[in-house]
Image 1 (tube, rainbow, N blue to C red):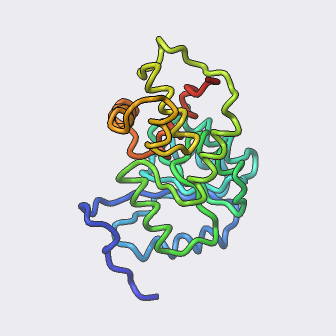
Image 2 (image 1 turned 45 degrees about the vertical axis):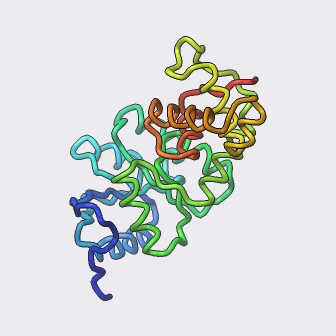
Length: 231
């Protein structure tokens, strides 16, 4: 196989340390071969179970973890939650043959940084790894739809934070809720009887306070922090 040049990003080519956890040996070997085509990707371990992953993580934490959501001993969602508790700096990209919204939503809610089907092409995998490493999250159209649908379906859930405990103002929470429900800036302005410029100002404040980069990542922030509530 021809060596792929490091042309995937305009950012400095830092060595990205990667870990793989999947109980299918042939799939792991395939990933290893694919990742080996990029000079600034360094595979530091490949394991077949969650227990082995924890053992490796105690020795060294990779920059990005490619993790199947079905593993012996635990499912990926519980494993991801536990991983976030023990290693909050871990950046997990979920890999799965399951593409239903609920799988994607709950895995992202558990702390995954992206969710990819196992039949993706090489370039998408490379882009996902680099984007998660450099920016924190990688959203495909499927992840975007699943997150927004998941937020809507769980919208009635009582918030675990009170207004006084949230870094967001009451108006910002209202705008965030409408963003998560897919409303445009103009629609939000009309619904709240405020100007488009004011909505844009609230959106800017939401991004700055949450540390997120776009509307979809704001949805992730809202779900993870339990700040959506009935209005």
